[in-house]
Image: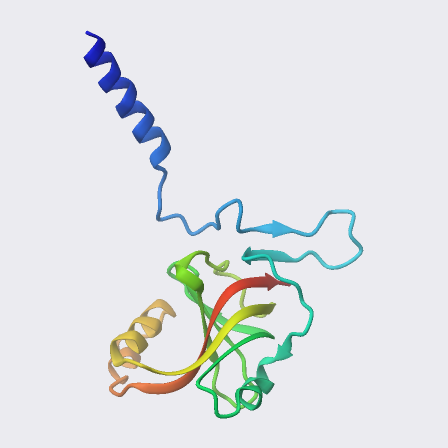
Length: 170
């Protein structure tokens, strides 16, 4: 009888602690907002806690990188698009015409799906890398592109990308 009770108690504990890992909401410890009595605009913090200090405009990122293929830095820019499936990536507008794809370190946090048009300050690693056709097609699918637009993607793309460890959303 004791074994049956112990088994039932263990199962109850296991299932009550499981949680749903498919949630698109950030974990309680990855989202913080500015105090309500603050005179500055409310900011949302995702991932590692960062500050706005020393952030450079996304337009200056390529120049800042120079000939490096990877650089730790902090950038800011306007969000052009966010993954509409989970919020697991975003594109930041770049005056050059090409958006910079932002992903999140260790897939550890997501952005709100309605964040387009807002300003983001991001700290992390900028990289020049080749994105595969499969990944480009998946990004297009997540962005809600048509089947024809997705099928038109037939070549990999060498691009500037950014892996953020922390984001401030304004």
